[in-house]
Image 1 (cartoon, rainbow, N blue to C red):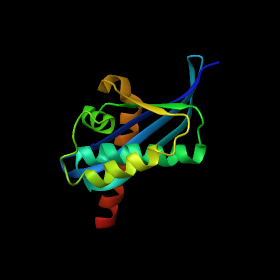
Image 2: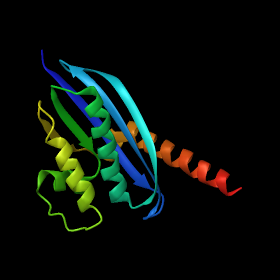
Image 3: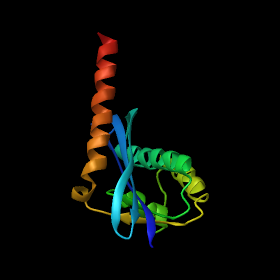
Length: 148
């Protein structure tokens, strides 16, 4: 019986930088049948799109640490930059992303079942994208209410 954890993450900002949020969907899959075991979203304030993508991955890692998975984790991201940086194909050149990258790598070292990263087209990441947009909507609404 093949058992895996699938994680879909998305981060975005409205403007670059601008109000930003992230969304995460975690699924447990056994022999190809998947069930969602967690959905998360968080408003993260003003940041760039790439920083939001890393923040989404960090949110996923935080939530996964609570689940303490022993099976392999397959991360699906629609950010080619983040996927290729994590894999080591692209060099880390942006000083603003480096601390986020380092935190991700440190947390990945704690996964006993192993992990893999896969770039997916935006269309296959719609659920995490909706959650990221929900976070931005809620955060911007909250900010606007505070101003009134």
